[in-house]
Image (cartoon, rainbow, N blue to C red; front, side):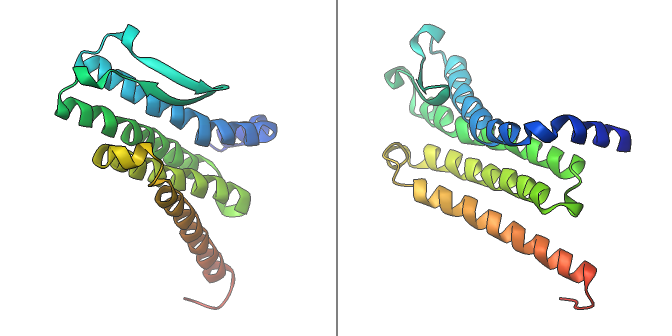
Length: 173
């Protein structure tokens, strides 16, 4: 297992920032919109009627003819995006927590903490989108999502600092 970690570390070192960008920012958006599309397909919307919207390579939304959905199907389509991308990010953050040697490097801890923070943000976004769709579409709830991401990141960094202080000093908190 240690040999795998060393090979992973050597191979991924120059790619860490692009991988971080795609892992935390691009993939969850693809998964988010894919979950909406898949749920709409399961609800009976034909694939030719589902239209993806992009800004450059960044998926920003999909169009689904909602008049063909029952209220329950519409809610399921809305809830599916954030919860599915949150679940994918949770798996990624648990993988990073397990296989990155974050205890020796604060930058690696930031990667783990940032990934987990975006996981919480995606779960909250899924809840927002399903429970209050109109406010979600107007971006009225976006500041709350960003607050959760920033607060989680700050709390995780405080935990890291406390753990480091108690491990390397005689002060015990």
